[in-house]
Image 1 (cartoon, one colour):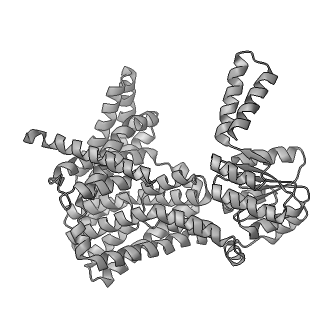
Image 2: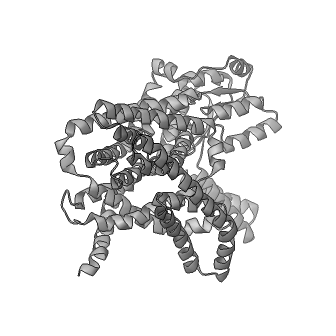
Image 3: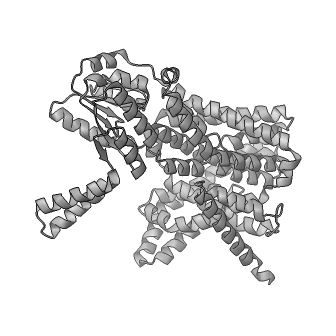
Length: 564
């Protein structure tokens, strides 16, 4: 049965990962944490169900390559430009500052300088998967702090590539280091040049031929061969396996087949990524934690507090409000999944010790586990603080006297909280009808654009009573709340009606619980985007069957009353 041992291990790992992922999902944690904990339980350092971790690691290496390949396909310079300076310059500054923090920790603990430098690089990366999943679960992907976090994460993910290039050269010292580093960079440039030539002159022709056969199996096989072939090519010339896969993904991203390639390879990537995360869990030694509890606690505490301060300063320097600062800091303090990749490569090259590797993995898992709880705690703490007078003043942004003066001249106006696409459409309609309005938004870029357009606006969090007090709600006719955060929506309505109890309010909602709370607060109109989209589809469909406008209107209104 030895020839079936790899298949048996894979079946056990996937089965246990399914249980762990389901358990994590039931308690509303990211499934990746379930995979990591599953690996710890069945690994050789715990129950010992899987003793030969090397077999699983072989499959996990494929998962790393596929992860990097899809990262290359999804990487977009346009997305990087959209988030602007806070992502590019702020993200780069955060990496440098956090790496310096890691270097300081290593120096204080008496580690060799090389290990201290690498530890700094490991902790400079945050978890894209954990943060993205947490933001999606909280409905905050489109929020200002969500956009800032994703922009910084994009820069961090991109920084993995040069880190992988220089990592193999760190095994040398003195003048030899410069020679090895120079040779590594030269090989990377030559490899990149060869891939670009093949990618722009050979790959399009070959992909067209394969796509012309109209076989999904052959297309998927081509994409997998391209990914693994580039990865093996990079490894063969002394570069990182993952680096080759990333470059191949970048080349595919520029072709007409990028979307189809990503759609086809994503399920395969997810399966092998599960093996990767479970294998990482297997490498975590609980006895190491038991033998070094003080060191683990000290390092984790330093990482959490240090990265919280560093990542909080980035949006503050670029003019974002206290709310964005607080949420970005609480969301990016963990160590990321690509730190695992770097640490595994460093261990394989014998650049770091087993103890540092174990410490890095342990700290990464603990900080990942803390992230969803920290985001929830931050949300509750922030919204409690702004309900108090001192807290509201502390988190209120510095107000623009010119904008406030314009606001004081308004009467019977509309106050729009959150100036996204829906609000912009409303603003255009109000302008055409010569109705006045004022905008409140927490994103400084949005406010700058509104000011350039001559729109009266206030920069700040619309759930903050200090900010709402500047919108002349006593003279306003309607308050429109468009942002997706249910807690912020409730607080904005609550604080606005304290200022003007007779104010007419229109609010965006997402669930039945939100609707009940807002009805009790006296909201006149509740709008659920998903429901309205469905009703619009129903209206068009019934129209094709010849129903009159009055019949369709009656049906749609009945459905709306039943749902909202």
